[in-house]
Length: 75
Ligand code: SF4
Image (cartoon, rainbow, N blue to C red):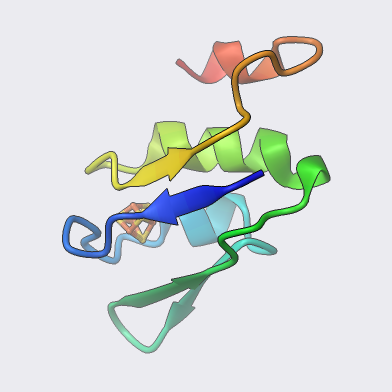
């Protein structure tokens, strides 16, 4: 899956790094580093991170049609 973080919007709250630590990580106090080609098995965690980001800075492709629909619970 592909994902993009709008780093202009990102405030470094680190919610995403907390929820999907294999995909997002804080680098220093405020800068976020992330894997733009996250593994499919990270999809559920990424969905949670997308939902949890206070400024909606994360956009991810491939979250729709998630088998089992577990990501819907986060909305
Ligand atoms: S949760 Fe949102 S604001 Fe916080 S570090 Fe992640 S992308 Fe940035």
